[in-house]
Length: 265
Image 1 (cartoon, rainbow, N blue to C red):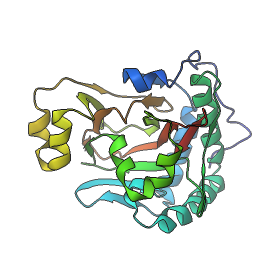
Image 2: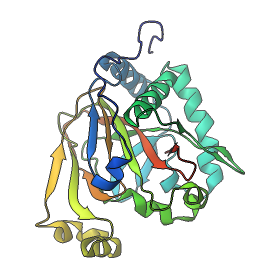
Image 3: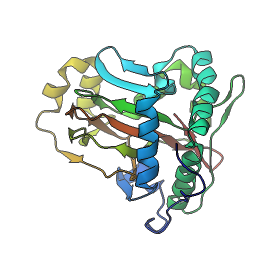
């Protein structure tokens, strides 16, 4: 269990304020080393492995699971919103609830002090801010672009809140690195390109469609916060190698018509 009395936020290594919204235009990446302390990340992983909460599969087509429901993976909104307080209660029980507050504080700093909040659905209540994601041996997340998900009916409310021409930023904190593999790879393939349309039509041909395109793969340190333009560029997580799972805490942020940043998972 994480000890809240001995685990203050580490602000000494934070980057100077940078406008997250600029990343919507540039497709860049921000990295914040030691956004949370490595000992806090390790303590959370111990809780996850020794007393695991329910795991939800991403898809039957590949090996990846989440603690907490991801909006893109449900069709019945009640399933998603019923899981939000259960997830929050579990985080609080293991002493990890304040890690979300630390991430929110850091994201607001990176946005030059702009307000970031989790919106309320008019019927079902507050959205979730984060989920925990586990990729076991062989686990991966195939090439995708986050803005795709906004076409689904479960996003109707959030679509109405997004600023015209807005986009989605992805964020995650690395909690446990695998022995090998598990890299985040970003492709120089935009969401409106011919290659993107081919991917939308046939995911099984992703390797063929992306062959020859430029990409960058990155590894990260435990406790590092990563923010990137996941709604603008196709990206994937490469297969995990070895017996140690890849664990991350993550979610999404987008600019609202109100001028603030809104977060969901």
